[in-house]
Image: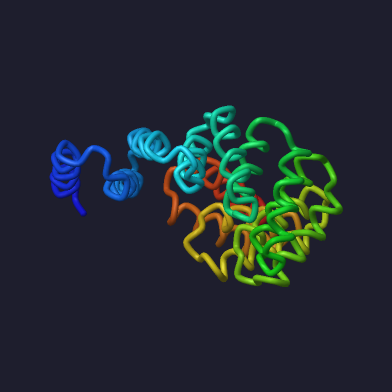
Length: 245
């Protein structure tokens, strides 16, 4: 949908809502539409209207809290998500978003508990294991984080975000060959990820594999021509190569 069509659709929604202002199904659809075109602020306001119309509704409180969390409005998001979970304790998505919210607020212990609760409800979700690892990283429990990322990848080997985060953990622990393998795994899954190419190149350079590193930095620039770090590293490696000649 182009901008003109999106504008027309929004006008249609608003005109219809003037006739049926309390049709909460219509308001929910409008909120979903607004989110799909990137207007999170207005989408949040529509979900608030549903909350007002349905005082005991879990979904509207979860959706409002989720959007508020995405916009960094942590305190209100925390309140709404907690209410949603009091109405439906087994709503794992709300547990996870509440964990993200607590992490954003710097409440890492609470975030860890949230993610663990979600993982208990859905033990075969690699994503929830990766979220647990993320909280453990924030708590400086890095060896446990590494194990959790590995567990996440046993469940879902194609979870590229977990490969990436595990690579970062391994690099920080100076386990460079292992970190290299994780960044390479990201590229196998997401070959257009410029940062994975950059990080793989850095690992190869640290291992003395300069020609391979140069190829990764050049690929980073192909995908992200404005990447200054990659440009600097390409120039440095080419200069080093000229000196050796």
